[in-house]
Image (tube, rainbow, N blue to C red):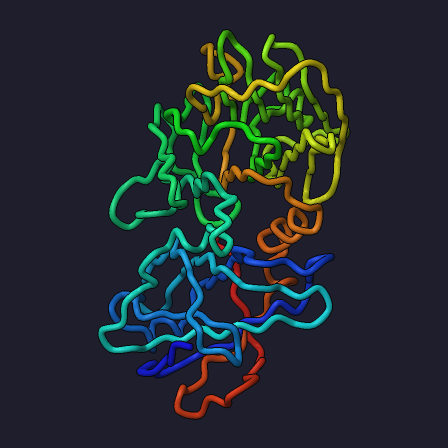
Length: 363
């Protein structure tokens, strides 16, 4: 067990409100700070002197720092922290350490997304914040697979958390990689804010070739649709939502399928919005390129609006996982509680201060 020494201050960060409906293992949890004076007062090395652990255990947790802006008197920052277990009944307490001379950030941010070696995440695209201070990020994949995208026209925009990317007649192309070959189970999720809700707006599209056989995650007149095709191009499984999104409003959307069950579902705002299970023939498992924001095989079905925090995982995420993914962002203050900054020299072995204070999302 690593000994977290040399840090001057710590803070207890707890899941106290919207707990998951079932315990979640190796969950990448958002930890957000909005105009926090303590980070300015106590951090060193531009905020690279940071470590997270479970309260009562000094084993350092992997984290991915997405956003850090020093405004002088305060700092605004966003982290994704891989939490070993988030309880469904009891509070889950983390401890964040800062203020270590010559401290360094967690060495392998991609560990945040590997679920303790399972590597279910095949792509995680923040679509706006990584590297913000040093340039214009486009579609940098945060997993070990490096499924980075090539941008054509999209621009940085205000996102659901931090910043996302604004699409119109624009798109991002993801080159072929074996990690994105469609398996027996798959989940696509993200945040979208459509400018219009008329017609077909492709969020994520994989061309499964030959021809125009696809796996599509899209809006059809505002309704979520998730579809997987078979080898001859006919429908394999399709699920359509029953509640249209609202133009100009951010919403969390997700599509989940498992052809062993068989099952295909879509979620809106963290809750089920439609399901179906139609299987005919053999599911197409080929793959060429993938596309964010447009139909893959034609200059059509452009997404009109903002996409943020798009993720692809080779597993069928549970309803509890998807709902907590939603709550962790949509109701951050109602999910996560931040204690006061405390001197590390007076830190108790277990427990800590849950004094008033909270972080907010960057909006």
